[in-house]
Amino acid sequence: MLKLALVSFVLAQQAAAQYLYDFNRLSGSDPHPFTLLDGQDNWTEQTYNAANRCGVTATLSHDGTPSLRFQEVGPGYGCDASRINDSNWAFAPFPPGARNASFQADMLVGYWGGSFGLAFDTNSNGTVRGSEAGERGVFFKIGTQANVQLQLVAADGTATVAPLASLGITGGHWVRLRVVMDLPAAGGTGLGWVDVRDITAGATEFTPVPALQGVPLALNPAAVDASNPSLWHALWLHFEGATYGLDNVEVGRAGFGRAYGSGCAGAAGIVELAAHGTFARGQTVMLESNNHAAGAPGVALFGVSRTTYLGLTLPFVLDPFLGTNGCSLLASAEVSVGLTASNTTPATMSFPLTISSATFAASIFTQHACIEPVAGGISFSNGLFVQLP
Image 1 (cartoon, rainbow, N blue to C red):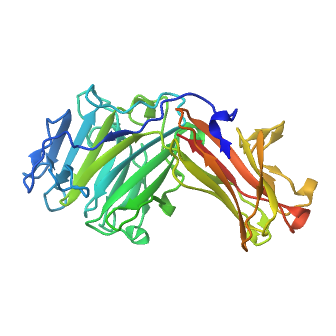
Image 2 (spheres, one colour):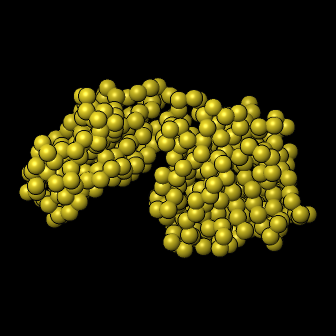
Image 3 (cartoon, one colour):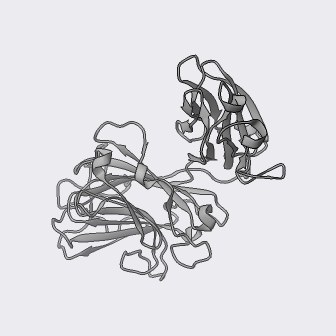
C-alpha cells in the first residue's frame, strides 16, 4: 500500500482542517415562534415581507440539537442571514494559490428555495445580503418548486439545475449538501461538484449529483468582490417561505477524485477508473478500474501532471507506437505500482490509497494500464485527478 507521506509529489504544507458550525452555542426554543437569530454570536438577519423572523430552535434539527428555522408561508416571504468570521468562530481563508475548497450544510427542504454559501462583505457594512451586489460567492439552492429544484449558483449568479425527482429527494427531508471546488481550474474561474446525502432517507454516504459535476463557478481571483475566493470570510443563507431549516455547517478543503479523458477497450469493454471512499486524512480511498480480463497483470501510474511528461504533451496518443486502439497516456508516471485484476468477469484492478494523517495538500494524476487480450496487448483507463485534503 502506497503511503502518501512518502510520495515525492506531495506539493505543499497547507491547513486542511474542516471548520464546523453547529448552532449548539446559540439560544433556541421550541415550538414556533423560535428564539430570534439576529444578534446572536455575530449573526445578522433581515426578514422580507413577513412578521415572523428567522429563529433558532432548541431540538428541531434531525439530530435533536439546535438549528435555524424560518416559519412564514408564501412566496416573497423570506429571510437573509449572515455571519462574518470573528474571534469566536472563523473558517480558514482560501489564500491565493489554494487548490481546493469545500463547504457543506444540512438543509431541511422546503418549497420556494433555501440557499447557503460562502460570501464577502463587499461594502463593509457588517452584513451580507442577496440584495447587495457582489457579496454572494458560490452557493447552493434547493426547493421542490418546479423552477427551483437543486441548483449550484456560480459567483456571477448563473445557476445550474438538477431535478430533485432524479435524486429521490422530497420536501420535508433533511439533506446534507456538499460543494467541492477546484479553484484554479478553467483558467482560474473554477469548477464545482455537488454531492448529496439524504439523511431522512437513511443514506450514510454522499452521492454525486450527475447534473452538477464540473460546473463553471465564474470565479475571479483578481476581483475585489465575492467572486474572489481568497476574500470569502462569511456564511450566508436565504430562506424563501416556510419549512426551511439549517444545521451543521462545515467549511474547509475537501479531497476528491474526478475523472477526465477517456479510456480504451479492455477485455470486457471500455476501461473506467474511479475513486471510492472518503477523502479525509487517515482514511483509505480505493482506486478501481473495471472491464479487465480476469487475473490480468497491470500497473497504476501516478504523477504530478496531466499536461506534460518527459517532454511529451499529454494526452499522448499511444496507438501509433503500441498498436492499441483509442488509447492515450493521460497522466505523467513518476511513480508506478504493479497490480493484478480480480478473478471475476469482468475484472477490476484496485489500488488502496491511504491518506496520511499529516496535514498537507496534494494534487495527483493517475491512470491504470492492464496487459490483456486487446489490440496492442494493453488497455489504458481514463485519467483520474485526485485532490487530497
